[in-house]
Length: 184
Image 1 (tube, rainbow, N blue to C red):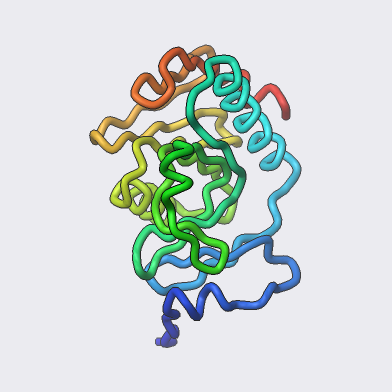
Image 2: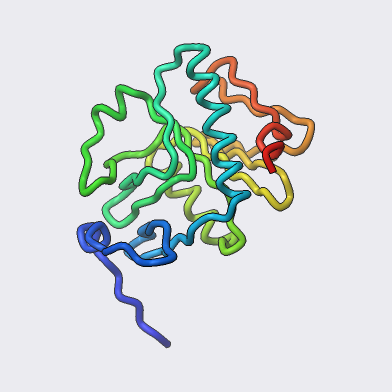
């Protein structure tokens, strides 16, 4: 049985860039290499960011939206959601360490890659929620559905023809599942 060396947060954040790897994540001390996303992944990522951005702009909601920022969720966990929303005041209060924010986004969106396993994805969702994220959207491009996990324990599956809402964070937001996948 091979032994894996676990890294501290500081060691992890000092890792050099690696060809073919878009970015790294740290999962309880274990380094996860995230490959450059395929076109479909990026198109969905852009669509979700645009849909959130349109709502924030129209309503003046006090949120910042970003694509793949690093969040230090615990002393040995750093994750980079595909898309996230963070209250502007919370973002200003977050301390940065080597380019990553200490804290959790209010809403995280993860677009499932073919290389991601169910156990790893479940652990990632729990890490966000345990760190204080209110809602995690898991987007399955192959089967064209979105699982929404809320800190309250509620889990909902949205499919074609359905509309998602985030009443606690973004009152009035309505995103049709079909609109997320219309770009691919």
